[in-house]
Image: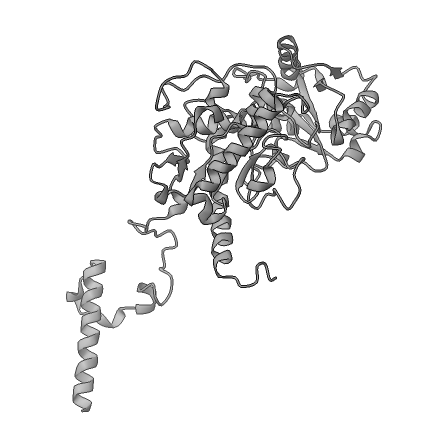
Length: 439
């Protein structure tokens, strides 16, 4: 019995060593069996000695793959029908997609819904963060191409206008469509992506879709029970001023003679009331430009030139914590001065805004002299670092078609992908819990 046991052990050892020789390419003919350190060579004992070692054929990883998006095929009255009445082509594709009109007002600022839809119509390359799939069973998320922001701007902007009924009816019809979808029913809409970038978009039935992944400008018009960073995505406004493409000065600090620049509406609601107070506080500074104006073509040209000639651009809250002015400043390479106690910023999981922006609380900004003197104390070399960083990250805030790597559209899809695990968790927990949210 002992002899058989010894023989079995010897056979096992030889088998292991031969296998080791085959898999590692080591020559066992040298007879140096006694020098083999099994713990240092086999990963199930300990990590390999070479810490930089990587497998040549890593296992597939969904987190590295593009987000798979199924886009509902909606009647054009929900989207491009609001852009043009002449569209008759079918099906809609990248070649016959109507252009977004170059409108200087809010219709352009809140056009995120259009650019997301356009990106899915385009035949993507390997650098895209989202790809359209036509089999809903293969989808990670479902995109709802309802232009709710444009609907509000066209039909419901005056809130009490009779045309508001058109906006309300579109929302009613949209909700009916979704509730008939088996895929909506399967998750109660949790894996659906719905753009609501204008603060009043989808305002009549917003609570009926609050489980979905919402694309918003900020959370100023939402309760915490409806919209939050855990499930929703904050997307940048589409900037109105032209991007500063040839800002290659060797001495930008001295060429930008204005210390602080603001041009915009000063009569605002909610947090935006701070603008009127700032107007009074900032009077009397020769190198501070604070001007009340409206978003006309002439006004946008003046803002473009003003931002490009200024070191810092003031960004107080609008009717909600954010406004388009922040993104105009970014593409003008004018260091944003952000004044808002409740602002949430796009792509903040990837971008450190403190590297290219300056922040003041509302209380600090309304303390006479505090903000201006604080800006004067920022050394030239620190400002130049922020200016350089602005030029490096500007492309993340560009909406364009066709989309490009790491532009605003791809950054948004990347943020959506980060919400998918949370959505899956919520769906799976709901299926097995006897007492919902017992904790």
